[in-house]
Length: 341
Ligand code: KG4
Ligand code: ZN
Image (cartoon, rainbow, N blue to C red; front, top):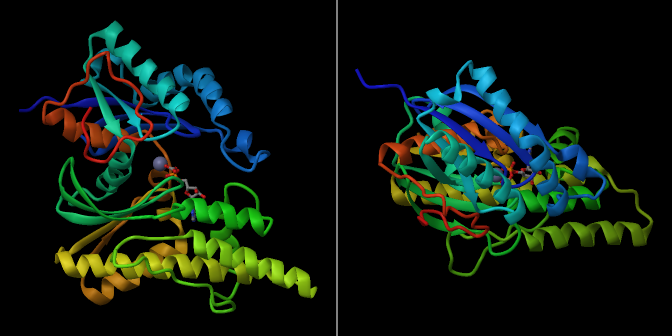
């Protein structure tokens, strides 16, 4: 019988200090997330220096809690996994330094993980039957990528945003209509009260690049709409603006993704990243996939936004392939998907 593989995973690329213990790649024994959202809310977004300092303060406690919740000792771990990019350099460095220190002191191997690979791998946690190849739409605060997952750890990016990431657009529009930070969950909630057909915002096409996205034009259209209402002294219906904006984002994401699914001929499609927890987006993909006879996968909301369990899952497949990192592992803020350092 093969020996069980336990991975202690650490994630600190943005504003969540997180650690998890994952057994054999897909069984989450613990998933501890210290969210810094409340700290950054008064600034309307993540302040990198504050994020780094808070990570330092919390990281040991979060790692200890992850081991305790899993009822496992550090000595039982097969590997220490950590996100080393992309992300905020100061924030990444805290997790990378902690993982290296633990690995050095314990002799347990170190495995560096790409943050987006983590987001994609979040789909494996609750869908035990899901295996590559499939197409995955990754939509988070910093990224909007349409990815062909050819195999574990093997990716081809076929579409990306030319400007703002989808989550960034949610956050900026939410700020403009007075909903505050983080905007995604708030727009999701108030959209339920609004009419998605009330205002016709643009759906951007990006030249000949079939699968690329652009959200800055949409964001400007919302801002222009708000300004013109203000100038005319018209009252703004926040729920209608939110619902119409959300619908415009969803339409573009669904159209591009389904086109890619048809072209590549895969029968499986997944979504990942913070924006993947959007209820309207999930419903739209459920319907589109059902219509086309495609199996649709999505993680639970807790595995959509940043967490360490997804890093442990991604690390498992790297670990099984023999990937090990040395103590020269560094934070790489603009690490490319599929790139190995
Ligand atoms: O994946 P994530 O936690 O961090 C990054 O790697 O960027 O994503 C955070 C982003 C934020 O922009 C947040 O507004 C967005 O995900 N988000 C949502 C929802 N929940 C989080 N966007 C739309 N609807 C949601 N329910
Ligand atoms: Zn993320």
